[in-house]
Length: 326
Figure 1 (cartoon, rainbow, N blue to C red):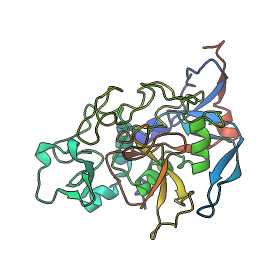
Figure 2 (cartoon, rainbow, N blue to C red):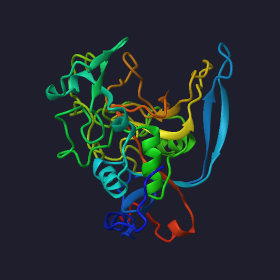
Figure 3 (cartoon, rainbow, N blue to C red):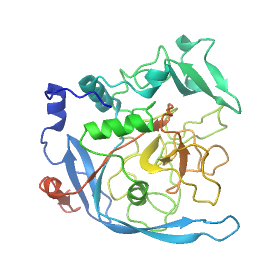
Figure 4 (tube, rainbow, N blue to C red):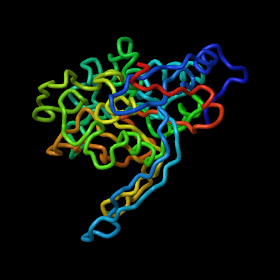
């Protein structure tokens, strides 16, 4: 349970206070509606039907399953280190990585000062290391920090940590259907948020010989700031694809007909900076990219963003912006 103060703290009052409406720059093809909850810009996604391909039996063609998704709001950018720090200061929350005393870090990013006999490669995935004292405030282990990374996505957060933050912020994690509807940006059959073809410098992925060489064609080695690359689609959403995986609310169920995991897992969407454009290593990044992980797991490429129900209170803070107004 999150320890909550009996009297709202100044930090909490500041974060939850009413704020001016925020304007989001959108592409020429439409209109985006934005609201601000707790000082964070959110895009309002209109009600729509999401059609998903599901294999119910291996060897059989996939079935098209329509899912009706009511209108909702989703953060335009992932949760940042600065925002998570405000949450921790207000609630004295300790993440699961802190409680465990270690977490997963991609080997090239392990700080030299973090050297310890207990920091060991993961068998079968030697590019990952279990690093002592790696958590959200020092995401790569002892010697790392977030002083210069306030506007980077918070990482080393579990599903449970993400749920706790969203509840504190008066929001919730998006459902998987909501997340996928949002990442598609109103495009039904496109491979990417912006369209059918891959475009350079639209998302942060690994380019080169993983894990030895990253050519840095996208400009980043590891995670990028939450506003990097600009909006990826006409809903004004940043970094839905690549950069860091994002927790969603749903328990993970394979859609390819494979058996379910032996222990409960929750769903991650979007891929990360160590995934690829073609799936030759790690995951292929597109609007369908997904995987599962246990709710207490964390690493330096997992973050999240929050969602909220669009109700009468939020509508009072809502405004639509067409390109003529921008």
